[in-house]
Length: 371
Image 1 (cartoon, rainbow, N blue to C red):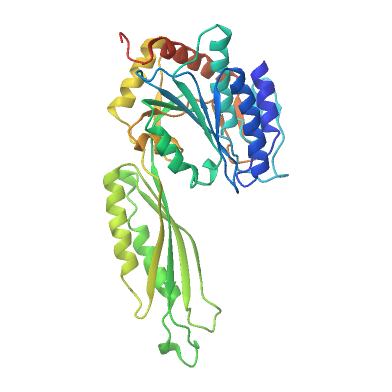
Image 2: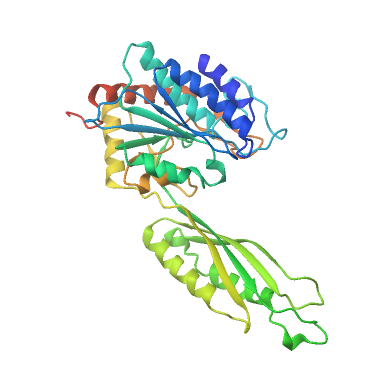
């Protein structure tokens, strides 16, 4: 199958987020493939990371538009995990499910439309280069482009039972820098202001914000501070993450974080907060559930759905009001490890699903039956 050969080609190119050369090599190969399908290639040049790439088809400006979203980068630096292999049931290698495999699913489905002489219109593709490190650069561009679209399919991996994703938690990463005052721990103990002790109080207060019943977690993942055992700590810093399932929980925790940062539990210490929300919550909506029903009617299949704790660029597009479904890629597991793999059968299933949806969309320029 040609698409597996294509997947092998791009998986064998290291595209770690910070490997600009490798990410751009993968992007240039996709440029050629999309140009062969009649897409225009729009490149957003970046100096330190890979370039973002927007592939645009023929547009009927009065009709609905569909965006297919993916990312080119993977998580392993050069020489750590780069080999592509396969057996009867599985494909192995970096990105086979997260998410070079998903990009190939979208590409192959579009190819099959072209092979049937179906003109591709009002379907565009956007590949970013920094998703695995939080989309700090691309998220603003993604949000800007999203305003031009009515629907978005994201080609991250499918669920174990081929579920698509209707909801993802929001995520924020925060940093607290605490200043205290150094003093000799033996001779001048009372003259010091212990930044480490302040961090310990703040840690406990932050963790109390977790509400598992509501799907909210606050994790203090790293603490650093102090000089040595014989010195009252003059500084400390903390790194913590917030994940949440709805905007009410987001707002509750953000208010509480400000209160914790601004309160000094140890006299003489001061604290400064930085960081913030990286990707806002993707909440399951009536629109996304209605879209699943349309897809089931169009394809005469049952499409299962799920919510996930992990984030993707679907969060960004969904937050812009675009009807968004994620998980259109192949099923796989072991992503972000050297055991990453993807099911061959799931490629066939997802390509066929996407082909049916694209065919319906370009003929009707919407997913609502009867329009």
